[in-house]
Image (cartoon, rainbow, N blue to C red; front, side):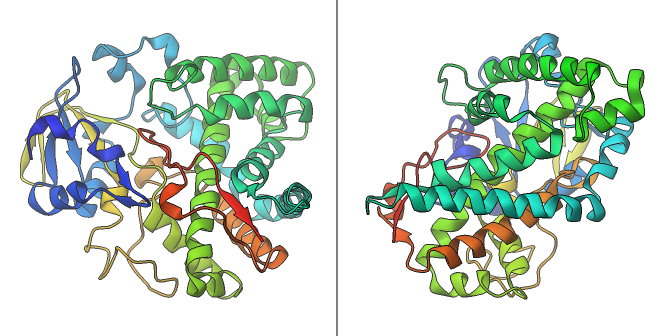
Length: 395
């Protein structure tokens, strides 16, 4: 494949499937040169084994945002902060502060609120469809559930949540639309900076308030805003996309619907949907700290490495027939939440939201069906987080 075709292949889909070119790369050249106009030397990694090797090796590969700025990318003032663009020891320090907020005990405390949020969204869905017209499930179900849950977790006041949801929707958009991508980073950090300032003055009961009370001056306002930005955007757009795209599969496959309604099987189904759909298409970029080799390919010091999670999660290395959803299969751990020290801190929260939301939706609307063919749903192109603009349904 000519190198020029590798500019966007990691972001392209055929419906819910990665484009065939990605699978061919994984077999024929799993470490491929990636063309980034006016950018650094870069490599696209598509195999499960090689992606795990890169994501798990923090001694050889760096996440630090300064690498991107130094490579002619956005300036340091666009640094979103948080965990995704941080190396140890900064990453270690911040993650140690966050981890207690995502223990099983904390998630059990939050679960009644998750159930209440889901029930409220289902009520709104029923009201929207009372006239018999199709309802956009993205608007009434998929977007509000994770947004409200993560805002509840952080302690974002109810009257400020709509503003952030608008910003978060554009956070991973690479289409060049106004307010997308890095422009949304600046908007998000400005919004959250104001929230952090108000929490400093009067700490609430949410995660931000607890971090301020426990760590005080050990966390700067910018660090707190960066952590909140990572949690809100990571917890909103990704879970929203999974709720929408997972529902497409549930409605088109009676066997998956049956698994979703079985408490003993819904956990396995959620994990399979996470692997199969892989809404986060690529991991945060890494930069080689020194000359190294991955999959037999020499990587030079300073080179950028992009790991395709959607490609790696379809690798036969995980098990047979990875291009099919099997709720009952046992495979190696998938990479939908990343791997290594940057494995998503909110992974269990996301899993729990889906495991509650999918069966609740199907029980509330047992005759739910798509109001448009799956191929006409308007999937979101050129986005790090794959999704769908709308999901019309009827019942």
